Length: 219
Image (cartoon, rainbow, N blue to C red; front, side, top):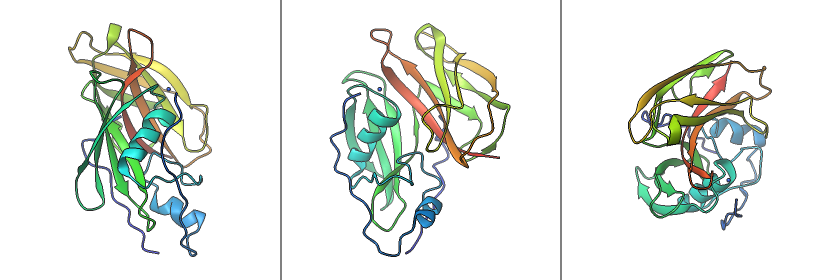
């Protein structure tokens, strides 16, 4: 089986109704869990160890928004084609809400779609970089704007529900970007890969509004 691994686009930085997605598993007889995990090591979602697969990019973006970001009723935009195997889908918490751009790519021979990360203009992560090898303590920095300046932060490892870290940082507010900087201390992960997730919540109901997500590797 041909394995294609492509690095996340350089600009990628950083709850629930059931997704109405059609899922399937690969039928290639030579596919193994190890080979799939190797091919999809750059992907944040879905978990390679699970049987969850998405056959369209919009279904993948919806599944990611609902199951990973925990948006309640996301509005899923149209697929914006990049090359023949990649592209983007814009996701919003409602029709007028802030945009989270979800970056997708087909990484395996079954033509399913995988999430490489996500970005929003309200949260820019400058440290760490995408696919950086990280360890505790992890210094994060960048710029953001949010209600009362508060941005939520979770550091997650693959295949584990409880985050390694759940905290907040303070950046800018009222549409004005301001810098954030924080050191995260965490226990030794049991997985080799994970994701840094930074998100804002709605002042109206506390639901997830937008997010930046980057893939990281644990040392």
